[in-house]
Every structure is written in C-alpha cells, then in structure tokens.
Image (tube, rainbow, N blue to C red):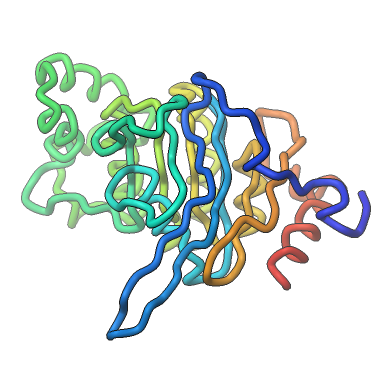
Length: 270
C-alpha cells in the first residue's frame, strides 16, 4: 500500500451519486454555535453517505464535531448549510425515524431492565405484548437472559451498554447511530463487546454509523472508515475496509490491517 493514504483511499463523497436507495446522504453540511458570545464552527462542509446495511465508522480528534454530526443526522439539530437526505429526500423528517444511542446508556434507574428495553416500543405505540415477547427471545443474544427483572444500578458497565443497545435495536429503525458506546468500558470488556456487536449487526443488518476514538476499533468493525479533521470538522479521508467478514481479533496482525492503521493515523496527524 502506498505511504500516502490520499493516493489510494481518499474519495470525494460529494461527487457520489445518491439514489433513493441510499439511506443517508450528507451534502456540504456545516454547523456553527454561539458559545459565551463567541461563534464556534463545529462542522464545515461535511459530505459523506451510508449505504444500505453498511457499517460506517467515524473517527476524529476530540471536539471535531462527531456527536454534533450524529445529532444533525437524526434530526435533533438542523444544519446551517447543506442538506441531509433520507433515501434521496432532503425534506423527509428524520426525527423519530433513526435509532440513536448517545455516549451514556441513559437507562432509567427506576425501571427494570425489561421495562427499559420496552421504552422505545412503548413510546412508538407498538403492540406491547408482542414487543415483550420479542425482547424475551432476544435476551440471550444480548447477554441479558436472567437479568430482565434487575435494575440498572445492579448491572456491570458492559451489561448496561448491552441493555441500551438492545433498547436501540428494538426500535427497529433502518438506520442506527452509535456514539462511542464502548468508550467508558475497560479494554478487555471493550474487545469482547465489539466482537459481540458484530454478531448483533449480522443478525439485524441495519445501516450503522459508529463513532469511536479507537483507530483499531474503527477498522475492526467497519466496512468503511470516515476520518474528520480537527474543528471545524470536515471529511479528510473516506476509506473502505477490505477485510473479510466475519472478523476476528487475529486480523489486527494482518499486513492489510497494519497498513490501513498507518494511513488512518497519518490522516489524524499521529
């Protein structure tokens, strides 16, 4: 692989054709905030997209606007410039149609694990008996069988994250955004969680955008890695991960993995 990541890997998302089948397309999106009387530009002309059933990982320095970008994608914020297309429609409402798990698990402490899991179907007015039955069937996949009547305070960090992820997946949205879901976990738990997440994604096959600060994690999980610059965040690299699935930890020692890691670290200035 050439020493320059740009030579081989850099693409130009704004030049990509975006048909109605592409779940999410972001075109030249910018966002500015006013903080203590100062104007702070968080994002500048971001362009990227996520294809159907694609696992996209997003990395960049702290404060580069990764979380802001997820807030814009799911409709919690509106861009100052540019557009976000949902299946080719820039006017389509996104709020409530995209699954989103922020950095904290946000489990409600007064509700049991099962009642937390059913919060999405409850808010969305779904058949609660059917939702409860589906949740019970999925408990083993999420490592929560036997813990459905526990309360969040009694769970380990990894179990809380699995519960929060299960709650997100039970909302049955085609597009799911995950903002550093493993960031607060220890290294061993994090490694087991990312292998487990790939098993879950293989079953549900949603379009998934996953924010991380860990370059190896971005490569290990993703079909494609998007790198943002320091603030104001803009896309500086958009690279496919040409590693076969299913993935295993032995892949981190492959020459292809190491070469891609070098390119990503170079793009990040590390």
